[in-house]
Length: 76
Image (cartoon, rainbow, N blue to C red; front, side, top):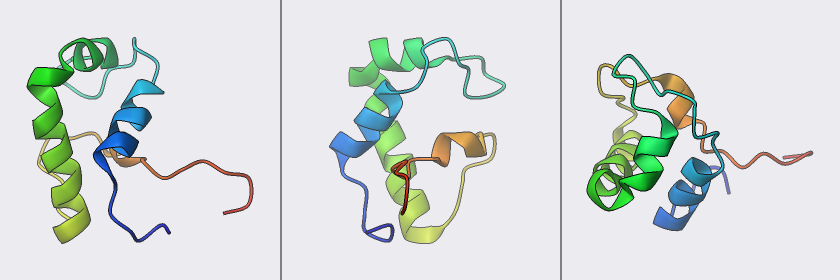
């Protein structure tokens, strides 16, 4: 299950569960910005997550904590 591709719904759910005042990185855009502008930035975020899944590459400047889209369950 941990090796399967993320769905767009799972990515949006993971972003929605993040505290809105947390900042992703040095650009200082917080999750409130991302949530309120999802129609604009969402496709780029989804492409970035899918790109990481397919080739293991994280674009320079991305905060690695953003890639914690693994479901949090008691006994994985």
